[in-house]
Image 1: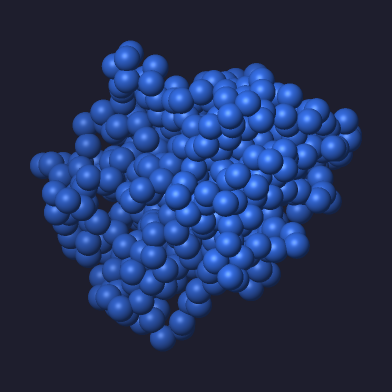
Image 2: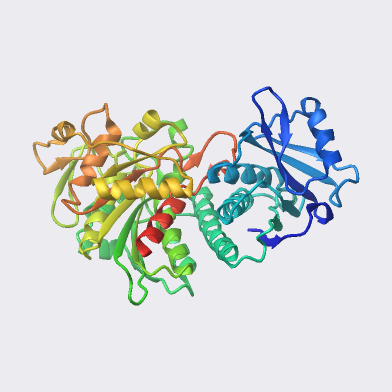
Length: 495
């Protein structure tokens, strides 16, 4: 992740590889450059030639222009804000900064960022976006390719508030946040031959080392002895057995206690209810919820939030084999509730059930699960908007936190009439029900294991892995969605 510094110097004097400013569109089709202390001659030149240069000011548009000696830097980068406004929402600034940082990856090592801002909050949003956009994953590239794709090393934010204490605090938080999102993306992007349950547990140990976060790991023997039938059942088809990882940040005099439960299926073949070949291509990402939980807890510790947070990573590999669980098997979740497994590809709810029961045994003030749970979520909300279900108060907290963090979550209901579709003739509940409304059915299944506890369920199936082109600060592949929202919620509970 690049180093981020602040300066109040005139951007014309900055000797970086590129200077980033913004452009906006007007109702009459003109393009306006909206940078800080920007040379009038260069501004006029760009605005006159905007059509020729392909500069419209549209969101996610990034264009490069030679500065022609008007600036000390050789290249001016113009990033789009969309329609001209007196002030721009924080998320608009995040995305514009992120798009520029992402586009500049591999072409320069240092940039100046001079987007329009009127407050400390604007400056922090720009910093967040730039740091989030400056991400690369080159672990499996050859040296030459990795060198070309290397990320930015230095981002200097141009602001008159460069010496403001509140801004420096905000920048420090942005760096923690971006590091957590980057680390989550790295885990999601790692292929399953390297990220299997035991390896994930080992990486969790490395992640919490020296942070003050405590960790414990249950292996397959401990899981069987503890009655974790969901994890054992899902993982029994793989040669690489499941794990339940518990990570806890428990500061003295903490203000409340929150439990986070993450789905960690390191590869989902569907089991005996096997997926199509195409459907398996991105199933290394089926552990995105657990990755988000792990690095949210690490970030909470880095920020020394005065709230106790425990993360439960429910990790298994869902594979077909002679030992795999079969459709019509009945498993017993921790706590004693039995489940008839009608479809082995509805496995995430089984491991989450174990995690939710274990989390609630510690009597948290609220429990939140996050999972790449259903294809129905993508059908309902698309690839960029996640769903949230649960008890009204906690669901509302998630929506408020997502709004402040800049992540897109949408509230969904839990219709009582769908519960009957999961009735089983041989067990307490089946793991499948009504096909239509499948996202809601999955939420209702999970609700069976939380009772009346304050709870929210986050389905991030679509937004967790970007199969399309990169946009804003979002790269291709793992996105790290959920970390910013969960951290914002913990911060709100800390106040």
